[in-house]
Figure 1 (cartoon, one colour):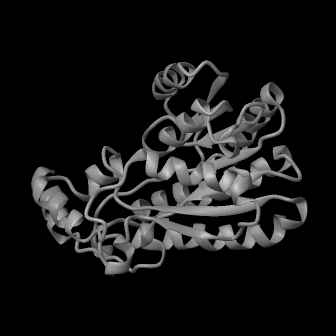
Figure 2: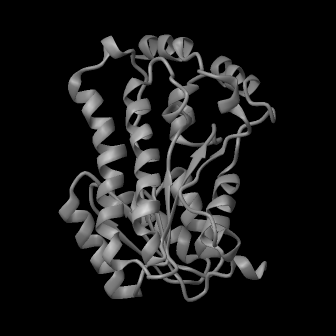
Length: 269
């Protein structure tokens, strides 16, 4: 084991950690010795995730809460702190998405994504501050390339994730004096995730998306988890305020055309 990636004796809290990229990150930290706490709305998903995490032999706990509920999030963070002690690594990854043109979504649909992605991120980060290890904590949010690549059919995500990126930079400045580093990861298309299933719902759209990736492939859960561990490790000790694309270069190719995926979604609906 790389000594920089030895997380024995450290606590990791992952909001949204019961599935997808977030569970992949939680699993990687558990595999490298961390005690892991996860937060999710679904108790069923939490139970399944904890079974996976505990296979590595360490401690894991799950808490059910909606990231849009600041009080519930704070309660879960306090419970994790009471059980495991100061939080060394905080990952904020809860997110929502669907395809729709701006004129094809309701105000409530737009608000739902902004509330989950942006307000939820604020609730997790703000609520965690008092429980973070000071100095030494690493905070990592999950963003999306829609934050800086204007993308049709994604107005809600573009707005929400742009907010997450700016929140990352502001908190890096405000919390640096506490010895807390705040960064964000921008995943590309990660195979097997709900996000890819929504944005590339059939083989044609999968091939279209893959063709736009300079590295010529979808990413894996390990691609993202490895960068999260790097940012949280001594290797990332002088990195803060960074929004880091881990996307095979797809964000270099400009806006993605989701018109085909939108049409497929409409046909299936």
